[in-house]
Length: 192
Image 1 (spheres, helix red, strand yellow):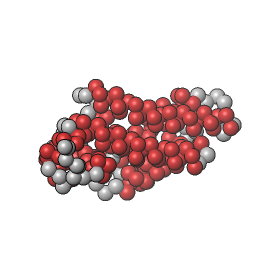
Image 2 (cartoon, one colour):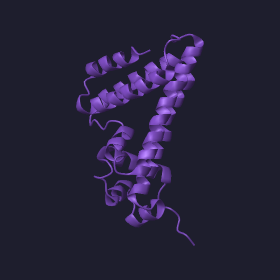
Image 3 (cartoon, one colour):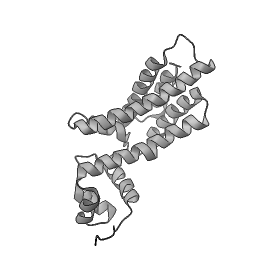
């Protein structure tokens, strides 16, 4: 008979996500994860397999619990162009308020892991694609409502907004100055 888990899987993924986000994949060991979760290495291996599998699960957790929820909330509760504005402003505020400058877990993963792991590269592309699709949907709705000029191409704008958002997240790692981030946000929103 299989032994019951000694920890909650979702809580474990939250803690693992925090560990990977703070230290990256390469600077996190399974021992670090076991210590962070307060479980034995064998429990960790039995539940998640290896570190890479746990990292992929943490990346998925980030996508559904943090990024996905934020985009869904903005899209449901704000007019289209306001949703885009709120996303940029909230991301810049998050960056400026982060005392350890962890940045964006997805961007960090793209930079650290995508060049070396095709599976993680596919996951990162898909998750970046979901952000671009958020922009495409909101801009398409704004266009159909007459809130966006007909001469604007939502597909091109969505790609530009994604690049600007990622640029803000990278810039904030080196220079989280709120005034600088605000200027960059205003520049990105001028695309609208």
